[in-house]
Image (cartoon, rainbow, N blue to C red):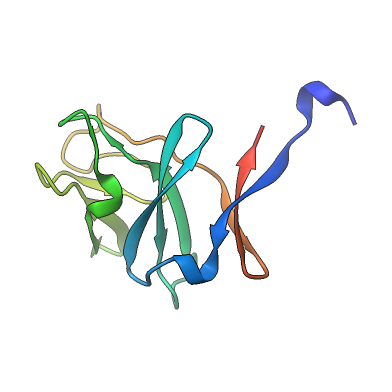
Length: 115
């Protein structure tokens, strides 16, 4: 495999570190990641940047989880913008978005894609 295209998975935490239907912040290098665990959903694990682009604070993991028209979202705890957990796009202002990260469960380990 070409090392320039090598992709691997990095363990961030264990499943037991997550709180169902809530957010948890984790650190990957210098980046802060907001992890959301929604058991029972088609896709149950989401990872987005913890940095709120409106308030310029690392608070997204403290946001309120919800569902708007079938779309799982997190509402920023400061100014209440809704961000789609699948795409990171802000539902009120599409010029705003959160970076999303591929994330998976591997047994009891929560892993994030590390390129």
